[in-house]
Length: 245
Ligand code: ZN
Image (cartoon, rainbow, N blue to C red; front, side, top):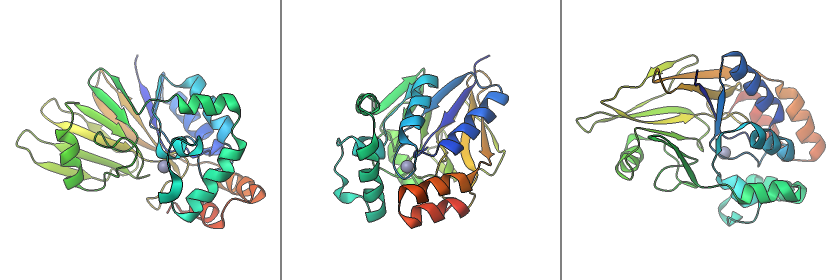
């Protein structure tokens, strides 16, 4: 058996991460890959990084990760994101910081590519339409590329005739991968979903069966929000977890 749990954009939300790891375990996942943004926004950066570091087979860096360890300029971040990064940077334990700083921008397992943003710009590009996805298909020869960053579960498919289609997978969607097509799949966000569904999002990928299952897991949102309040993190970041926007 070989089944990957694909997680992304945890953003230091320990309750969401715990719920997803338990759900993936129950569903039979025996591998774990993480597409970045382990920290930033949320109240438990050190524990989230420790958990992923222990459990994951492959991890790539996200923009918030590198920002938190001073490897990415935060002048382009919006005000709340910047405040959360400063809060995070002041609390990261030294070994956690050096682990984050050591993360690669991309990993490959077979013909599957893993990046945070896009193959063209692994840290910062958002893939939100077919036009952007088309350039990404052209920049590498992956069959499947797993991405995060936009906090929305999304599928881009490139057909043999060059047509790119975009799909927003609903809860419990099963995507069967075909040899004739190429795919970019966004797993959604574990710790800060932005598709109006506050439940933690992730995927299960079965490489032998060539199937990806999109999953949602409810978690104790109020508990995370309470910790954020106690930590003095920005109000808008606390509120958005409640309705997933
Ligand atoms: Zn993110």
